[in-house]
Length: 474
Ligand SMILES: Cc1cc2nc3c(=O)[nH]c(=O)nc-3n(C[C@H](O)[C@H](O)[C@H](O)COP(=O)(O)OP(=O)(O)OC[C@H]3O[C@@H](n4cnc5c(N)ncnc54)[C@H](O)[C@@H]3O)c2cc1C
Image (cartoon, rainbow, N blue to C red):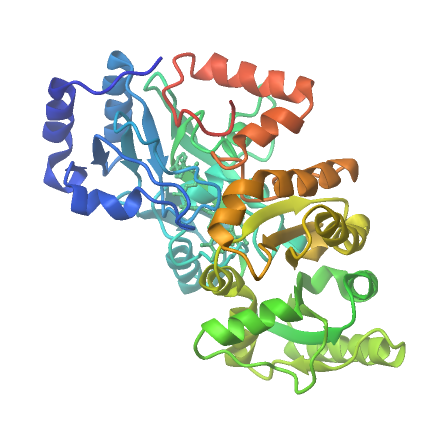
């Protein structure tokens, strides 16, 4: 049972952190009390913005002594309400954004140590200055932080080749619920001292530890890349294309995204400076990216494979980016889908995964199941086909009050999606996490054995339930 902070505790925290690190001013806090989608609204007794790991540890010790809950937050770009406190006003918002130093970049070992509050895009630039690249990117890169990315085990558009955050985290520094500092930053290739705390903290959503810094794996900066925007008829065809490219040039294949026509149209409607790369319309598009050392070889490989796919009748038309700026234009179409969709009005968002080979079946069959239960529903599926991960969004029927419809029917519609995913052996959260949005559905649909293990881990590390209560585990 957590408690509200006493006036004495708040004063001690204000003295500890100073005016830059402590605020209870509602104007300062308000933007951080609603999630990115505008779905969850919370309140907080104060917002704490420590500048060092020692300050985080001191905060946690003081809060633990009084049984006060803390909600860690990075860039607040998460998609499941994980960083939004509850409405009681008793919790403390713990912002890591002031801890924004890249402590070191080892150009020989290809390892960087970045603090939790470093924004992903800034980290990309810092690595690039050393001729290196951090091979994880996503649409929220301008606000998502290293701590948030670690804590959600974020994915993005380069997972096909480089894996999710978990594969890129070589070490973690974190403050545990008793206020102790776990210094696991050493990038050990081999470490068999039992349970792997580093991996446990990846994807823990702030329920087990406050990540203060991470050692991250880098790769050489890309000398050459090739990006293609490809018109085709269906996800099933896209999968055939993916398999062909993988067999022919798999080591260079970094991204394979699929996008339906209706998403492209939403982006063109709402996002300035976007244009359709192809003259003809196609029901589906694949956005493919290759990265390698030599531009000419990469370009030749891609052209050969796409020409063969056109000859085989798999692909309609193709635009290959002529330079980085065109490549960015293609990616803007993909990365702006969430924003365009937000502008379109309310929708149910499902970030789900199934085995890659079953993805076309899910995309084809699920809209029919939804339509059978709720005539007029419109489903949009886009995302990371190469990872078996799709963002499956469901818009209310066109002729109803969308918000009211979602309140009345949203849960039932989502249940149709999630049950289908589980039937196919998939996961109800591919990359966004559980947060508060999926907490109850996880408790309802996940296996009892897995749930019991998750609860035991949480109870073992955070017996008082002080770290991000109400998230992930019911
Ligand atoms: C346009 C757009 C596109 C996106 N695309 C993708 C995508 O392709 N793939 C993907 O995986 N995600 C995507 N996201 C979601 C989001 O960017 C990621 O979930 C990201 O990891 C969140 O980082 P953040 O710093 O904003 O974390 P927040 O939103 O602040 O927090 C997320 C969770 O992590 C916890 N947390 C934050 N910092 C810490 C810390 N230091 N220690 C412990 N816990 C912490 C919070 O309590 C919360 O539970 C997208 C978001 C946007 C807005």
